[in-house]
Image (cartoon, rainbow, N blue to C red; front, side, top):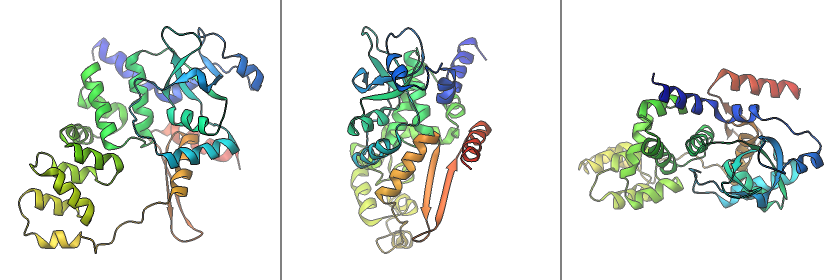
Length: 309
């Protein structure tokens, strides 16, 4: 492995937990934390005013659901912000900082009318800023397919990453990376449907390159067609009635999660830094799934659970 590749791998491998762990706490006293915001030379955990922060130029996420932001703001009003934002000093400006990770929390904090938020200040390069923004959002499944595709493409174009390196760093298969990158060929209509979640990656892959992709994409959404049915249509096999019929309007569809459930998932994910999935079985029971990628993440979850027992 060349020195350049080794350095790149180390930078990506640090992740958010490592960055936060490297920070030097400035004390639990709120007044002390507020004063710690003075000066930008030292990195560490501190409180900064929301007006001292601005959205990062390397934030891969473009869409922020208004209902989810409102729910998160309500949570902050009750419990505060459990996980600090990661920021870096803004070039050419005094006491101003660019958000590297945590823009959604910053937006929700403003809705909750919080004057200050906890942050970890780090001096990061543009490359590291983009890497960390991607890793955080991918780990939490916060990016829609188009945002994730554009973020990976940006790493390839600007920092010469290979698909294999990206797969290793973000913990995804190489085929997953390749399929996401192919979404760069999606038509504007397909992209809009992918952003909203109305069209899945499987459907989109079947439509890529089709001369009437937008019309077929709208039909997929309107009729609830399966990926198999879309593949049949895109391949010109419109007589495959069994596939189309089995996935049409009469087919059973998974229940969509309500706004409250999604809000709780987001709140837990923000607190743990991991993907959280809640499934209701009836009015009172269900399952809570916390996904981890490393044993250290599992150890952290266990430690948190036991500390509250």
